Length: 488
Image 1 (cartoon, rainbow, N blue to C red):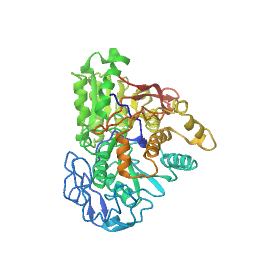
Image 2 (tube, one colour):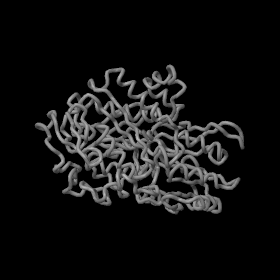
Image 3 (cartoon, one colour):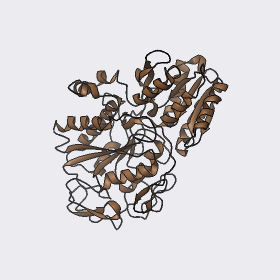
Image 4 (cartoon, rainbow, N blue to C red):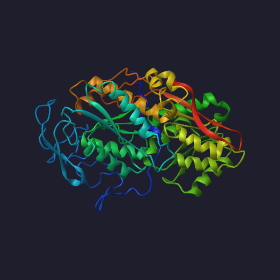
């Protein structure tokens, strides 16, 4: 059965949403307090670690088995009654290596108590590369306030209030892991969402597996994530999007796609892009690739721009941080204008478009990217509640594409939480996710999952770049949505 998936977070990628196609940044060893450091995957040397493929290593405190189920350790304390019953007081991992007391009210602490009924507040924790990867807007918090106020004014979720906590993972896996730990242990997050950033999403997903916390993200790599029981992708993975992209290129620009030797992928060298690179080579034999460092230098980006022009590239597919892509576009000589096209969600953020229009308007206009959420031009007409909420008061002038992504992602989460019922536990949420089919939010594809199938999206929206102004004096910049719900 074909499975369709809701766009995100897009984050949330929105969050993302917002930022995503990102590899690992330099300086991944970041202090976590005192003199302690996290290794690049955020788990090395800790109890409950996972191996290089993202598979759990048994035996440590907070470890999980091969199915992603928690293995009880000495720090778990009492589960507080039978499965599905309410915990009373238990000891859970606290910040700074200490312990915290969880009274069973607000469901804090994480740990392995997946069967504890949640309390008065449901906190959704979101991490995104707000700094370090791309020119991003400062509208995350206003979008989060809009979403939570909307649902809380209507009674919340089975009487529980909704909170949304957004943290900056700085586009670094180690920082992302640290932030996710803080969201679970200190801010009592019921579930985590990764808005974007391939390496960061994988790092937090692996941490969430050790803590038995539900983790959802924009679809990025599949490497190391397919066997994590608590992980769910809420948009198409990069590997799944690439064949769509090749087919779309052939349909939209048949002359430019006719000679594969003139069609290039330009990508940053992180192992988590490996499945997308392999999919590219399989979907378009003879196409070229330009491999950059994980964190390419300015001279390397300029060289890539020259290589594209020297080869007379007709189409170019960027898979890198948006800030790096903007440098490549800016480095193209006048008259060198390959058709830029790619996958979601990173490049299709309006803040990226605004910067690209100002710096490289003629070279940027018409750039086309897939996205798990529609642009501002189509979103209000696709969701009546969103239109009503953003047409009143200050919201009418504040909302942007980040609001669209966060609204779409959160709406799906609220619908799923409602399906779980009043006896909310993390275990029930995961089970509900695995049995969900036909969940339609209006803004994105229908959500359908199954046990062992946590990747299932079959649709994307298509975004196309526009700029205002005239040649040499472009301003503004945003993406329109020529096609919604593209599916092959």
